[in-house]
Image (cartoon, rainbow, N blue to C red; front, side, top):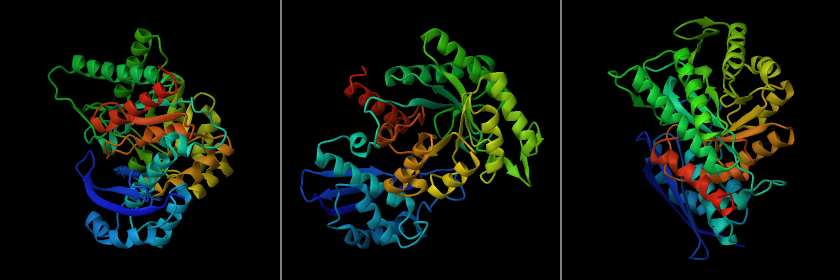
Length: 405
């Protein structure tokens, strides 16, 4: 058995300049250690665990010696042992004492140490039963931002390139081509208007939802034609962010649940959307069910705020057949073990998973390993910015190691 000898916690900053937690786990063997930092979300679901305890990262660091004592000597050979000790050290249902970001950083760092001790990559160490090592996710790349990620842009939060090519080299390349094409289209159409990039590296422009979608669709078409690689448009509505008083309030229109269903279905039919994330508010299981029944053969209907990576929420969705895919974010539940329970439940019932970054990211590359280990249909990630490119480059490394390149 390889045991945890010591633990170091420190404050680091995410890509929005917000404080988060980095953990380094040291094993009995001085040559074995693992280090990981936790991302943070801006658009968060109501059912996520607490990212940080009262007092923030300063409180985490003050609590560090107690957490270390609770974990000292625990086996690093499987994530379950460390994660159970983390739950015990916290003692709440929502990680409100330790913080979900703290738990995530420690859980991933411990898994990295365990993987190193066993001579495996993190993807190999965490690989779910029955999966091949040469299966790689599509890139779900953020090309144009709105909503909470880009104030002043469209209401819809993310306009995405869905690149299903199985070779990471190709899927990354064509997704980046879409991002460039979106930027070129915006600069050509608005040559004197200031354009920027949002929290996740997508372009930001003061345009409406439909104009943004038209630009994305054209960019996907041109990128696919020029590269001879498949890429399709997708969107993350993050609909809970503009759902008020029982209605979906866009700048251009206000819709009830039935109207939103008709609107989203129309977008799929007109624009060939292959990816639909959170098109309804986070308690609208039945609306998701109606949409999945209508378009589930054409697109991934993905629950994020609907599920927040929680087993009990996914079970509710399975009972209603609400979606055909689940978004996976570790720090929504705090540990890898909790995350893998959700992944295993989804897979056992035929649901796809999409492993996702957060809007406030760090430069770690471990997310790419998780997407491969989980057999995810997609790795959702920004396409520009060092904290996003770190994930893309790590996925390409995994592809190269598997003989993909």
